[in-house]
Every structure is written in C-alpha cells, then in structure tokens.
Image (cartoon, rainbow, N blue to C red; front, top):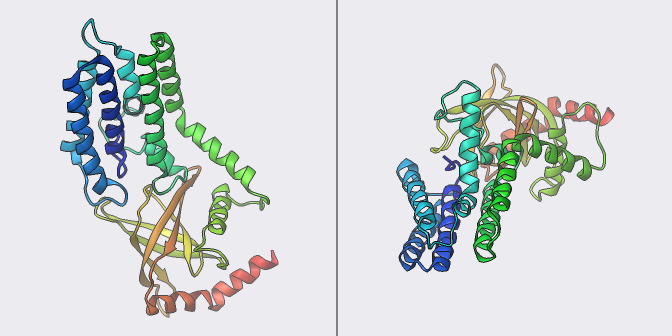
Length: 336
C-alpha cells in the first residue's frame, strides 16, 4: 500500500532486506542471510529503473510479492527459542509501512469508507500536499526507515528492553496519526521564519511560492503578473485523465496555478493555457516541469517552470505579457 511514489516501496523493501540480513547474521542463520541478500540485490537492480523519474513500475504483483516476503522474513527470524530477534524488532524494521497501513485504513473506516478504497492520506501523499517536491518525500520516508532499522539492530546487539522498543513504535504511530497537522504547522512556522516581510491579505502559500521562485535560478529576475487564464493539464501515463484549472500568476519563466485533484509531482509534462483571442481564448500547449504542490485550507496550488519553448510559444507568451492587460495589472500592483 505504500507504493505511491517512484522508488518508495522499493527503497523501503531494500532497507528492510538489508536489516533482516544483518539480523540473520547476528542469529547465525546463514540460509536467511543469503536469501535476504539475494532479495536486496534484486530490489536494488529494480530501483535503478524505478527511481524518479522512473521507467518501470512494480505493480500489484511486485508489491504484494515483496510484502509477503518481508512478512515471511519477520516471522522466520523471530520464531524459535534460540533466536536473538524478538518480535518487537521485526515490528520496528517494518514500522513505517505497518503504521502507514494501519493509520490509513483506520481513517477510511472512521470516514465510513472501504479500507481498500484508494485515497491520498498516505504519509507520502501528505508530504507532497504540503509542498515537499521532487524526491524529498521519498527521502524523508526512507530516512525514517533507516532510523527504525538501526534502532532494531541496536536493540539486538545491546539487548534493549522490549517495553522501551515498543514505546518507540507507539510514539511513531501517534506521530504518524497526526502527521497532517504536524507537517502543516512546521511548514507554516518555516515560512514565518524565512520570510522577512509579510504582505497583507495574501495566502501563506503565495508567500511560499514567491520565496521559492527567488531561490530558484530559473525564476530570478522574472517579472510576475496576476492573471486569470484557463488551463488544462495533460496527465502522464501514470496519472490518467485531464485536469482543469487556472493560471493565477504568470511570468516568462513559469507560473502559479490552481488545479483541483492535482497532488503529485511530475518531472516533465504538458499544459494548455488559454490566452485571450480576438473572439474566444486560444489554447497553446506548453511543455513544463512541475516544481511543487502546496495547500492553503481546501485550496491547492502548483508551481510550474516552462521547459524548452518553441519560437511560436515564446511569441504568444511574450505578446500576452507585454500586452496592455498584463502591463496594467503590473502597474496597478506597483502602485498598491
């Protein structure tokens, strides 16, 4: 169920297999040691093509097979009187995917939905919704996995008491349950500390967007205009269907958009922007890179950067930005 972003399920599995290999070695079980090392090598070979931007996807057959194998390893290593690996160690090794599954399914049941109906309440989805872009959500989740896996190994080596290890798992579970609230607070606190000036009557996400634009070399020096243009996002093969939205801030290098239902980050994609025409708006398709997604209440915002535009596309964009409508908007903003 954690297979929602490129490289995430494979990365979690790879770390777990390596940890089970170390635990097998400590227990003197050479068979499980070799088996876990072989599985870790197979997953690593797959990760080469599944890491963002991926060209291969494991699908249900791959994810279910890996989940079943990890479950088997957890049981095999913790059974028997002579084993050094206690059940709580296996729980820590798989703490991140187990907690994510329990939390997500419990929320669905509480909302009177099927626990197997997909939604966007997984840990990695929440990180993406709060503006963590690119590979950052995967890095954060894998870091958590490394921490708990290291604690599990240390628990075996130093014979740490089981109640203490279980308490650590419970603390993480509570953290995972409140992750949406906690991450939202951290993002807002970070914006407050990183922002020198706070304009009045403007959503926090817009401040965050402008701060990121200034920090990004592609947007330095770009004049931005408040606009209201219709937009259609052409989704990739991994995210079917088209999504409609609006461009609310535009420059020669990128734009800020509001697209409902858009919560993922794509490396390269295409959008159609409807520029004003003589009689009706004219759609112009443009290649873009999606940089980040953020939220303000129930409203979602996305930041995009233009990729290699043709001369015709550049001409349309420049003609609109240098036209009287945008120039008047920019002059009004300067006056205010």
